[in-house]
Amino acid sequence: MLVGAVVVVFLDATPAHAAGELMSAAPASLNAVINNIRNWLVGLLVALATLLLTVGGIRYLLAGSDAAEVSKAKDTLKYAALGYGVAALAPLLTSILKQIVGA
Picture 1 (tube, helix red, strand yellow):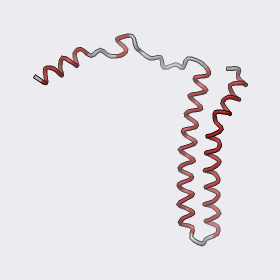
Picture 2 (tube, one colour):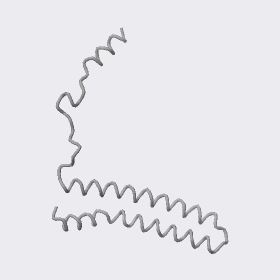
Picture 3 (cartoon, rainbow, N blue to C red):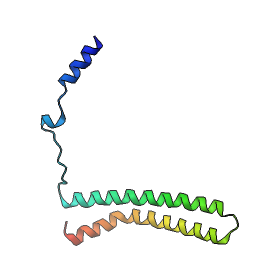
Picture 4 (cartoon, rainbow, N blue to C red):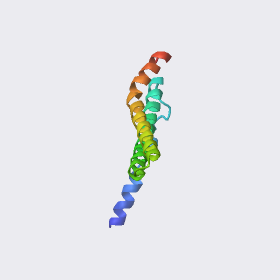
């Protein structure tokens, strides 16, 4: 009986595109394209900055008393902070870009 109910449910289901709900893959405007690129880049920057933060922290912990390794670890942590800063400024940079292209 359960099998019959499952078969009826699947036979009654219609694909979304058959009901006229096919979504367009193309963005609606230039603003949407710029916002999509910004969101993608911010995600990438945050991921890379987090990776650099982790690597820098591990390098700092494993450096011991080696001054050169401590310096390299601090540089890595600075680059991570720079990456987070650029990611935080991305909305400002995209608004400037929108003004330049007139979107």
